[in-house]
Image (cartoon, rainbow over the protein chains, first blue to last red):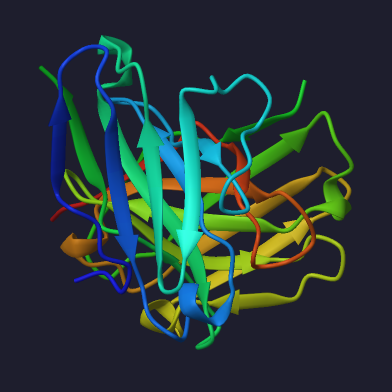
Length: 110
Length: 121
C-alpha cells in the first residue's frame, strides 16, 4: 500500500474534465514538499506531466493542470481525448528521506 | 538531445546479482542527480534510490538497503545499479530517471527506456 493514495481508476467521456487526487500526510505533501505528476502510456516509460505542484514542462498541453492544498494534490485534465488514456502517478518526498510514488490511477476514456 | 540509454534485458537465477547501466548524453552529467525506479509487471512505480553523479553519494530506499548499490563513472557519463540476492519478486522493469536539479525533491524529467530483469530458476 502506497503512502501517497490515489484512486485506482477514473473515467470520462471525450471532452469532459476529470481529476485525479493524491492524498499524503504531514510528513510528505503536508510538510511542504512539491508534488509531481507522470503519465505512463502502455509499454512506455513514464513522462513528466506536472512538476512543482502546478508547472507544465515544455510540450505538455495546457489541458493538464495541477494543484496542491494541505496534505493533498490533484491533477486535472480538461477536454479529455482518447490519447489521454494512460496510467497517472503522483510523486513527492517524505521526511523519512524517501521519494514516494502514489499507487497510480488508470484513466479510461469512454 | 538529452537522453538516457540503458543496458539490455537480463535473465537471472534466484540468488544472483544484476548490474544495469544507464548512459547519459546531451547534458552535463554531474549537474543532475539520477534516480532508479522499478516497476513490477502490472504494478506501480517503486523508488529504489538516488545517486549524485558529481560526488558519488547515494541514498537508498529502506526496502533495498543492503541489497542495492548505485555507482557512477564520470568518464563515460554512466550510472550503474546493482541489485544482489535476487528473488522472483525482483522481476521488473528498471528505469533510470534524471532529477530536474541537484536534489531529491524535484521531478524526474528524463527517463531511460527501461531494462527488463527477469528472475527465474
